[in-house]
Image (cartoon, rainbow, N blue to C red):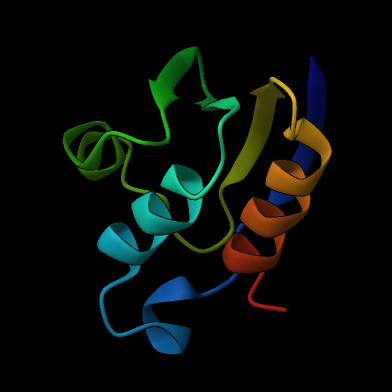
Length: 84
């Protein structure tokens, strides 16, 4: 299991449909990917979960990945959320 804490950038300015695009990024990996913030934990592959989580600029989030491609998943999720 790998974990990384990040601060979300302004994803709504960088992406036309950030919620759907974030789910697509997560679904590209075999690993289980969760996002954690303020005692909330959601499955990053769930569009309804992401909608309820509402990732927004300035929010501190822990990305947690567990599986065969967890390192690659962490990097991809971080790049999306910090708009690199």
